[in-house]
Length: 106
Image 1: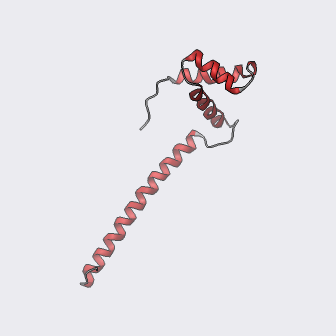
Image 2: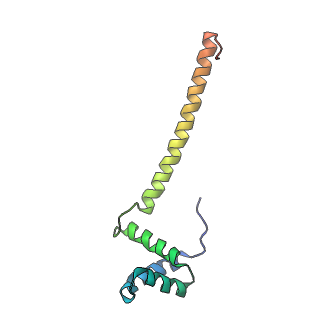
Image 3: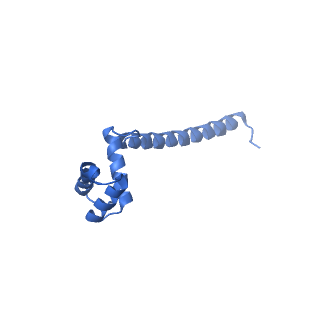
């Protein structure tokens, strides 16, 4: 399930490209985020997040890429489902074992 974004992918790409291309024209990276975000109608923090994700995904910054993050989430969901299934099977085996023995659990 994905979130609906207020901004199109084209706008995101354009904004990130503008920051990366025009960064030397500003005294700091935050100044570039602030100026460019005002031009494009978003918050500087939103733009900063997009730039960081792009840098990680392209390998110019250390971190977990978007593909890796999605894979981790998928594996965590599978792990949770398998743990739940194992718990159900364990409870079922205990139930049937006590039924066969004729004993009741206390």
